[in-house]
Image 1 (cartoon, rainbow, N blue to C red):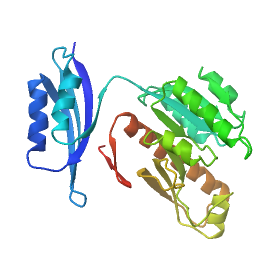
Image 2 (image 1 turned 180 degrees about the vertical axis):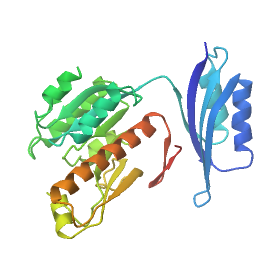
Image 3 (image 1 turned 60 degrees about the vertical axis):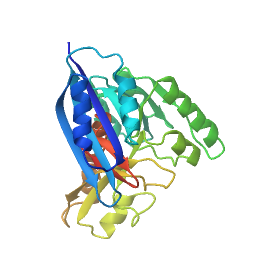
Image 4 (image 1 turned 45 degrees about the horizontal axis):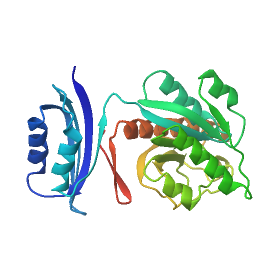
Length: 281
């Protein structure tokens, strides 16, 4: 029975990289099923994602590849394609993204394994129970923020989560927590920033007569809402629509953008490139 893997890598660009990687996989009896590459001429870096199947077991594949990759200075990861990514969702009191992700996961369209939901409110306890997902209520106050984050990280680690999704989790993470979740936490927010900050951004946008509503999904970093962007989208609006219409359109856009970002990340299609990302769709 074939074993299918996904290999992602980045390294300094040089002549013959595609040939070298293909040759290694051929020697390992690997059949390439999908391959994408990108040469960043600004940074001189090479990025590649390869999905391949082995026609026979190769217990030494990981060690063999590691030795090969070190000769090219590669940063890389190798995953079994069939393995669903262990995931923890975090949410506050706006449940549109949470509900959307749960439905997509339950329907089998997201290659993730939702292990737990963390919230600083109790609003979605019953929703979590309806999907048989453990729900952790961890209140957060300025005085208890450090302890609350420690509890949240304990849940993440105990569940073996490789992805944490801030599905409208309305708390600013500390630098320490951002560092602990580096490269494996995705956030979603409306794209009115920095023009309309704080509470009721859609009301502020309505008052200014905006014509575009958008959303941005990005990796979490210590720089608030400035992490490498994975996906964005917009929807047009006009003067005939109410603030309630704008809010509903914005929530739909946020849900769709976040779902695509989660899907691409869990399929190992996203590679961080400094402050940007390479996304092999």
